[in-house]
Image 1 (cartoon, helix red, strand yellow):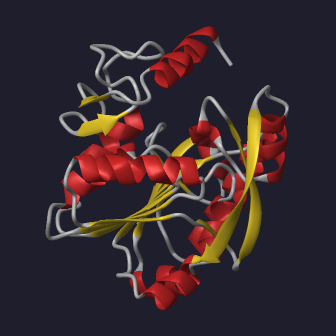
Image 2 (cartoon, one colour):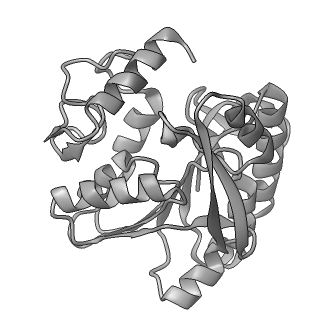
Length: 263
């Protein structure tokens, strides 16, 4: 972990119970507990938004049903809740119980009634997974085998057993509205999540916003090849946000880092 990141993590722990109004980022103007968005600038970065944040902020999500798959600390959940408005709906899935509770608190702080938060991991089929996360930075948690091994080498890392369900199954059993848009940030399990939602992808065709992860560059390259091939075979169009390129079978390695937007 770099020095600036370490300072930010320690400050986040210090202010974990501080309630405030965010001053920057996607959740600007919304109430939050924890984090550092009450400061005029965030230590590892300036107040300028990242390219993927600028991209997603420009999308029209008004009145839509949005799935936040991998909710982390809930910044995107809060952003989506405001973006879709009261006529829309946000459904968040977060396997780490610590993070899930944090999201629920922040949703309640803002009085959002059109948000549901599920403490479950999404995958290819129902079951259990071992989820590892740094105690000081639970947002970096993962159940991906290689990433999990890296995390467990860090001092103070923790593990927890999490429930896993396939999205198609969960939609049916819980009677969930099908998504118009899904943000997927699952630290290496992107393909398994997609394989667990074939009916949703084929029948409802939601827009997808996916962050590509991997334990190293080779793992990221393998991941994007599998994810892109899976989606291209379903006739999705793939746009790499950071490079502003359309991704095909011939150039998919260009998207091994960053975010893809799929329609």
